[in-house]
Length: 246
Image (cartoon, rainbow, N blue to C red; front, side):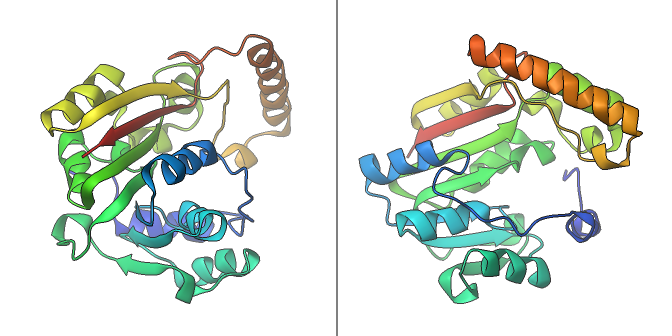
């Protein structure tokens, strides 16, 4: 079962501010994408559930990869704004607006990736299997999801329960994810916590000014500590990354 629907995402993107982000060469997760390009000779890629397409833009703009963006909702106005600020247009990226579960791939890809997608579904194995259907022989699967099993998860659950509720927290389990990849006959599987300390709230701008000030102080102190002691862990890392091969 999906934990979100089309209306949820339409309202989400229409209410989201500052989406026209300029994607630079050191965009988050870029080190992974550069490595895949170099080691696996990536020529084409698909970003599943990736609207507004930051990684599709990155792959095309900085790595010259033929990129497809597939999502259930592609908001035309938002997409135009994001592409424009990156000096790109819709002709630079292939767009597929569809329900992933009712779509039969017509093409296979060297790289299949998603960021912040699989945790919105109850059946984690099923949604990962949907990704593998797009993989070419020797293709790379790269999935990034938030880690809400530590400090940041407590923050979301306590101060933004509506957003927390549309995430499948049980999917954020390294052993579970590795086991699913093994069951799907993927190879060279790596599942790991990623990133130093980070905390965020979708609705921070709606909170009282004193709360926002305290939030920033806590963020700053813990960020400094994480820089001095850079340990990726279940407690403080903001993400989980999955890398696997066909």
